[in-house]
Each structure stands twice: as structure tokens, then as C-alpha cells.
Length: 239
Length: 133
Image (cartoon, rainbow over all chains, first blue to last red; front, side, top):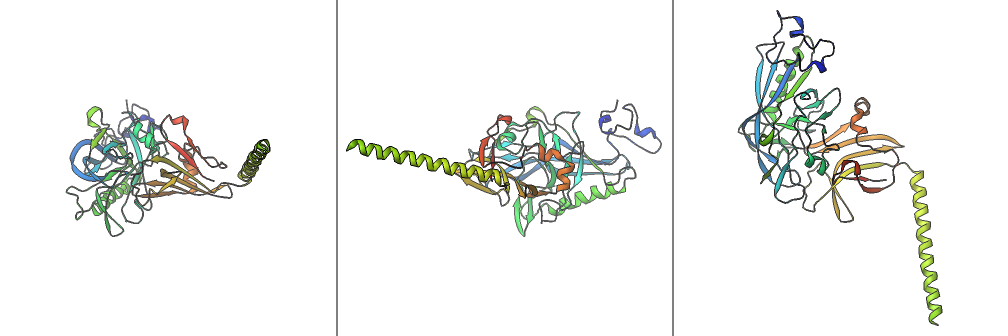
């Protein structure tokens, strides 16, 4: 049975490759369009700003893979941050308000292109996650995020983006990205002199171009996020 | 003599109480007559909290607040709806608010509201809602 049956109500839950096995492939059960899978496979580190303080913290980078069921030859990889470190009370311990999907069944999102990119004015492309047409998406409960007010409900999150991460250029200056639960696209060996702006745009443009080629859903980009469980999700960190 | 002084003191106290009652009445009448112009939704933070350029902060009665949303009204209608995030703010258009009402409704922002700082009891957290006229 198709575990994504709830997002394609026009098809029976028992269909395979839209009943067209001659022309279509289905290596991982994804929908027709480029699908970004943000994995839980670690792929280096990058600096991230601790929200509420002026300090930085070493954050893990994770591998993201993009495939396309309409194009078996298409595959690309990039790296992102998944955690969101904050120290609002200034006790020297950073707490994680990073976004995690609620569960395996509610782990599928449609990415909406942000017309002005994000942040405004630095010319980098960005995507926003939506679910069932809304940017309020199911999320694993995060009490810290609710406590500091970055969420107004414990088990949903809003405005989750995939935008530039690590050291990046903004207004002619080097900035270090913080996060309130977004995914930061960050180049390997990211630094103040090797910023992530160009890398982010290259990644995003490739995905957008691939999405534009789709005959079934032109422009549509899907996102799946592998849920981290137990110790895979770091709750806090000294910095 | 002492009795007279005590009487004068009592009259003064009554006058002061009356003045406060009149001022309170005037203030509440004004609140009813005017639409609010801005609502800020913010959380209290420690004094060492460092704001980014976008996560602008404010201080009320010595308490520092971190602003998450700023909603401006013009004649009772939403003029701008802004969310502040670490790297920049996001402006929501009226079309976006209408097409994705979860953004607006889940904040439970009323159109007419007196100035208040109150704990949001629904969340059962330390979150505070700050609403300004």
C-alpha cells in the first residue's frame, strides 16, 4: 500500500508508478517531481549563531539528496544544518529548537518558492515548507520552542524554510546564520571567506530547473525529512 | 485640631481616588472608541539577550521582550503582518493570510483589544502575549 496515498487522493492506495511501468520509475516511493530528502546522515560541521547571544556554535551538517521519479538520471546531493541553537536566558547552554517531522506518516512536504528569496536583500533563493496547502506543518513536539515563543503550538511549526546557512554574505558583510527551525544550506568547508551564498543558489537553481522540466507537475518540489530519534536529536549543547 | 487634620486627609484621599476613577473611565472610553493600530507578539527574555537587526527588542517596566510578530492595522483592517526571524523578516500579503488562515488564526489576534500583557494560558508555557493599542 502506498504510504503517500493521503497526498494523492486521485489514485488508489495500491497503484504503482501511476499504472505506467513502461515510462516511469519509482526507486523510493516518492511522488512525481523532484524530491529533496533531508537525511540524518552527518556530513561535516559548520558554524551557526546561537540565537539570543553573540556566540557561535559548531553545528552538524547533514546530507540532502534530490531525486526525480520522472528522470532516473537525475540525482544531486548537498549539505544542510538541521539544528537550531538558542540560549535566550544566557546560561551558557544552547538548547535545540530544530524542526523534526512529527512521525513517518506526516513526513512529507511541498516546498513553496519564496519570491524574494531569504533573507531579503542578499539575493539567495529559498524554499518554504507547506503541508496540505498550509505553512503550518506537523512537527515533533518541542517544549523549548514553545517556551521561547518561536512556536505558538507545541506540535506544529510555521515558516520552516530551506535557506542559506553557515557563513553567508549579507549587505556586504559576513554573517553567521542562526535558526528558529529552518534548514540552512551550507557548503562544505564553509567559512567567512568561503561563504554559502553561491552554493545555495547553485543548489536551489538546479532543483528549480529540474522541477520546471516536469510534465506532470511543473514547478512542484517535494520534501521528505528523515526523522531523527533518541540520541540522534541533540537536545542541548555547551558552547 | 487633630480631628480637623484627619478630616482634611480623608477628603484628600477621596479626591485622589475620584481622580483615578475619572481617568480610568476616560481611558476605557477611549479604548472602546479607537481601533488598535498595532499588535506585537513577543516573549520575555533576559537582559543579556542579544537581538539581531531584525529580532528587534523592546523594554516594558524593565522587562526585555523579543518580538516575533508585528501586525499593523489601518481603520481596523490589517495593513501589514510581519514575522521576525533570525536573518530577516517576512511580510505576509493579505492574499497569503486569506489562503492560509492558519497563520493568522492560530495567533488568535483580535481586531480590537485593550493594551495588556498577559500570560497565554492555553499554551501552558512561559510564553507571554503582548498587545499594544
